[in-house]
Image (cartoon, rainbow, N blue to C red; front, side, top):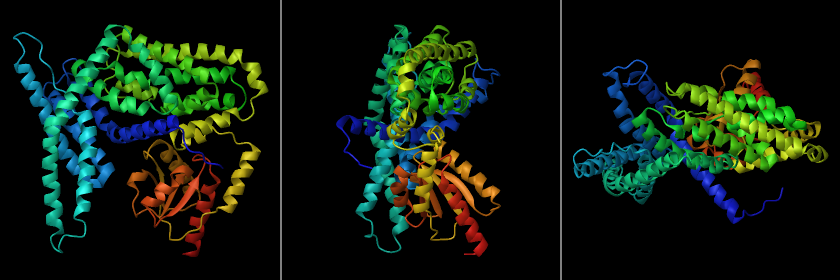
Length: 518
């Protein structure tokens, strides 16, 4: 296969994707904490289901201190393991305290009777201070690496991290707190203006195409989530959590392909609709849009319909819905918003379905004449846009005889050869969730059916790989990164996370090891 240099536009897209992936890596592991906070607000605040003044006191410190510190810790860990996580957590405390002081000073200048500003929660501050503190700590450690006298290593390590955490907390207290407060004020005012003028549905013109090209993480986790949490803290809910997570447009598109599509796309659409709507893995509908880019218009129309419906009903979620499953959306729906949220999903799906059906019907003859490998090509383009493969996308690929023959041939010429006793098998992807989890589940079932009991199969992010892994399975584009993380492990590359012939070879290899006692 020939590799060509990326154009300027492609390079920019890759950079945005990587930035979005990094932001997602900070936020996604902490979604359980956001869900827990949402449950506290749902039950115990004044307008909750079971108001409790004592337990409601948890809500404020939870969002103002715990969540930003968790995000900073996670971000620091991504850069420099536990050492970076600890220094990042210290640093964000400076940003939190600095923000509180700035707001208190501003409120003190307001005329009597004028509404005072509330707290600004340092989610963006955590996304800045966590990686910055960890990276600078890592850089400083390199300066004296190998120069510390024996016996003084622990002393130097402890004091250097403490002193640098102190310095970064001061950096967070002054410039970063001032910067983030200003940024959050500007962004908050912009969102309020969009809501007041009725223009918020226009955000779908940006969000829906961005989702298809995997550019949405930077928007969602960098802007919408922090602003949505601030709104939810004040109002008990936020419409911003539904701008990107609404599963309606995606399932509407897939239903249109189910009834009016052709070939492999039509055959794959019903299963994809179940995965997207109930499982929350939105990326399964992206290849369908890429097959016929004009269908993005249907997604935009559906997204705008959903946003408009939520505005009319003043509906919102208490916390982010992740993944974007209908179950997650309903679980986070505010107690007064069920009608609006459910209608927004139904109507957005209906609008997308109608427009997509018209487009598919209008081009049906042309599509039948040129059907060929369009769907497989669109799946490959989607994986390329994402920068990696995934189990959800691999499950959409056609399984024709030619493809099976190619895979078998590749497997025969590149069979895995064990270099060590295999006890721990790790599936690795960028985030360590969705695609690697599904691949690990497939192989775990195969291992179990083979009667092998003392081999573990888990999934991790590539950044979290360590020497405990005996065999690491990754998608082809990620194998080099994984090998760099764990050079001592055996590495297997696959194209299809859901149904790779390499899995049977791995099972045979492990079984033979156990049989021979190798």
